[in-house]
Image 1 (cartoon, rainbow, N blue to C red):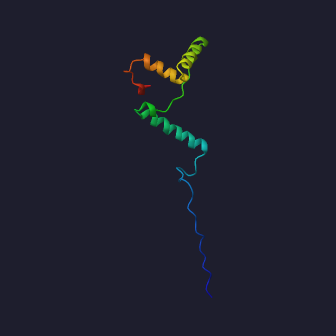
Image 2 (cartoon, one colour):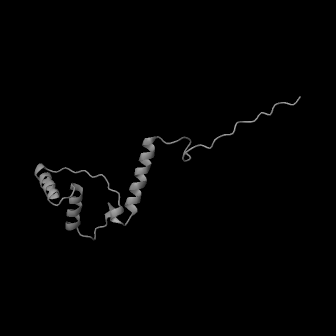
Length: 100
């Protein structure tokens, strides 16, 4: 009598991208990696429109903050856009922004 052929069932290819390490990244790890890559790409870009914004925090007194908000509203800009405009108007262009 012949023995029944034992074969392993065919394996389906795994879905998605292959993992970078021994196991798949968590959502938080994936997002952290994505943000780091975007930041690096933005810092290396010479195109100002393609640059990735970097979080910025500062303390302002109430009067200065009020003046900044009013100026931004009058110019129909966001506070970030208003700050960028003020910086571009009042700081010399010779300052290299990549040295920060």
